[in-house]
Length: 256
Image (spheres, rainbow, N blue to C red):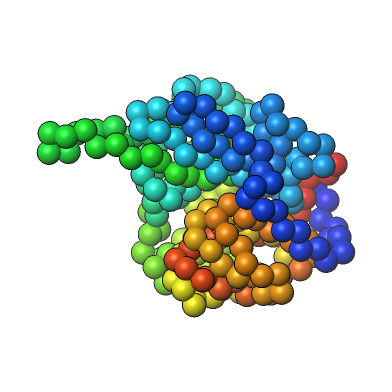
């Protein structure tokens, strides 16, 4: 990994520029090269390799499939997602609950929309909307693992909350732990007029999964828009309508 920062850059990527995968049950938007979608100049930013914005229909989802040597963080905005994996972990992920899966030397897992259920005798159906993010681990071949944590109350304050981190400064904070000491995911839920200030870091990735905000010095950002910062920070992000933002703070990058 290369820790040398580049010249200051603020690179705005609009929602319409993302790769797209659509099937009968999945609407997925990819911020970086993913699956059959590949562009050599768009494989990662800092340590972040995947930022998939997914909507899955009720009763459907991803069947059992493998992963290896990746820290996978899932954040749900709407609905619920059932997780099961080959290490024996299972659970339901919903808004306000952070989940991390360390693929390590190899893991199998599935993810399904859990909203196909009966309520008062009626079938209740709701799509699940979530963002799944993959970060390179510090080392390959580690033991696979799983962690989840309820942090919804902390998000009600409107500030940036660390929800997944490998950084030493977040030990004992609200964050679940990831196996990369140079990366941290922050989340903020903002009401109109509320602002947060971005940390200064060699690499930042700001994503707006819902709502709209303004970025100081750059203007309006809507749902699905992202910004890749290099060697900068300190800008204010202000909500113009109820919004949620996901911010990766990264102190290193992947070579190449």
